[in-house]
Image (cartoon, rainbow, N blue to C red; front, side, top):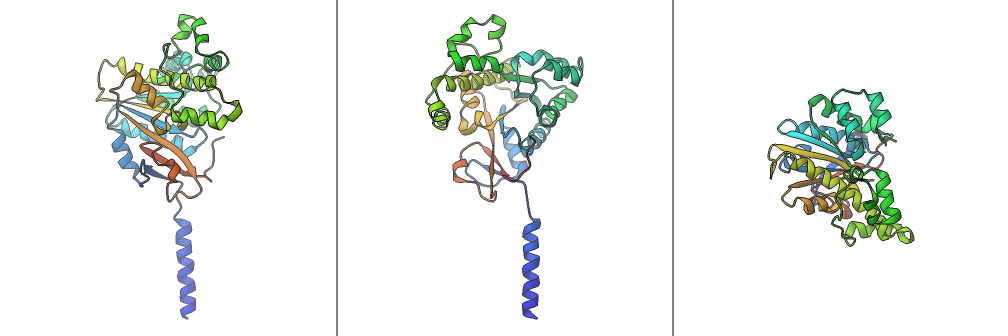
Length: 290
């Protein structure tokens, strides 16, 4: 009888563990678990939130929308994204104003293949709520030009083309740890021009954010929150876009979110501690959007 009861308790315990599954856990920079509510409360204290995502991760995309909705309860929000390039701002504005439909927007703007599933909900939230959505990224062809020919190749562009890129000369430090990590990762394929191509993306996104805040005519925008969606690498470890915002507008308060995946999400890996103010740790078995 005792053996039967023990077996029954063990079975029920095992079932309880199996049913207690969660797809993600939020950690702070020190690796301590925090609630979604506490994260949003903390994000609200900063003018800018850099939401570092994995482009194919559904948890990232869902939380981007939820964070944006929740911050908009108490603040005017400005949305911005790496995924739309600056020379497509006119098309984006026309869509936000209902002057063109989704089909026309798809045709005229260079939208990512996963726009419909992953970014359209964010754009449509801005559209339905009357919020600005800023196309922040450098047109890809100009980042490619830097990779092939260096920064000075941008001097040959027209004034209109230059308006889509961070002003030159731009701050640049190839010794930033994340840029050095790219060189190490790329091995023989790495080069200073590769890092410069990455940097001009970071700088242009940062400049877009700062420009949007400056047009609000406020030194510190207490009633406005800019939420920027970007690949996590662009803001991890307080570098990339974060570093450039500090160069262009040092007084800006910035919060960061990073996304990581792990086989075991019950404890944050040591290498991910300090990656951001908040780290969304997603089960590596989570489905991908593409």
